Length: 301
Image 1 (cartoon, helix red, strand yellow):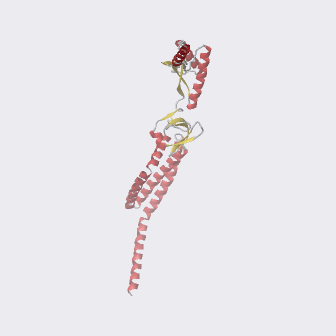
Image 2 (tube, one colour):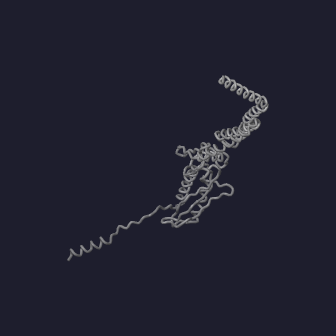
Image 3 (tube, helix red, strand yellow):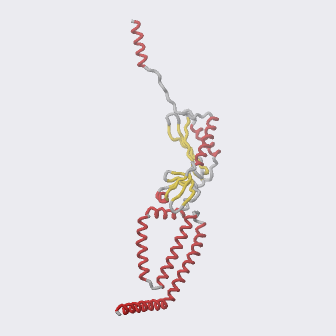
């Protein structure tokens, strides 16, 4: 009899609880429907805003991977805003506070664990909007030189002149200086040489400047500069500087090659000597000569 009473009592309590839940569901049904509709609206809104941002970024960010990641992050943020608003409509303030607190703790733990990765990620976002570094540019950085073939959220990839690829973390690019040959259309090339001490220095100077100016036409506010630097061991050394089109390191080598050929032709034509180091070797051995003379005098005696 006691067992029947306990069973019936439990059934009554369960029925009462279900009734309370049903009443609560009926009372909160408008808020629940509104919360679901708001959440769906934010999901649709994230899709359209993502497409709009993607179109706007196409003209500024050439890297597809960074565009896609930026759009995905934006979509997640919009959906999370909709989720929190939906919880607020359901009067789940306690749940909302717990979710925010948990997200903060988890975010802190993830940030500490992935500190290096996050640094490269944020550096990749910065590089994607940096006009001084774009895909196809020829750069020198961290001891490597080559054309930029890819920029993603972790690293950049450059293709060196020997056809090998180098992967450099984005954080290294942000922290270290880099030289970009492609950003400027014209660059100054410097070439050193020397002439003999018997040369007419003023004639050499004028001839060199005329030869370089003919091979490399100078633009507005550009000129060929010629300066003697020092009295060398076998020559009077000079440096000549001139402007030319440079898009990568190879262009500088080509310009120097052309300049050397033209200067050598002009010097040969005008009898100007480009001396090479001279060494004077003295084969005289006084000690051996004196010894030989002593031996001759001894034999005579």
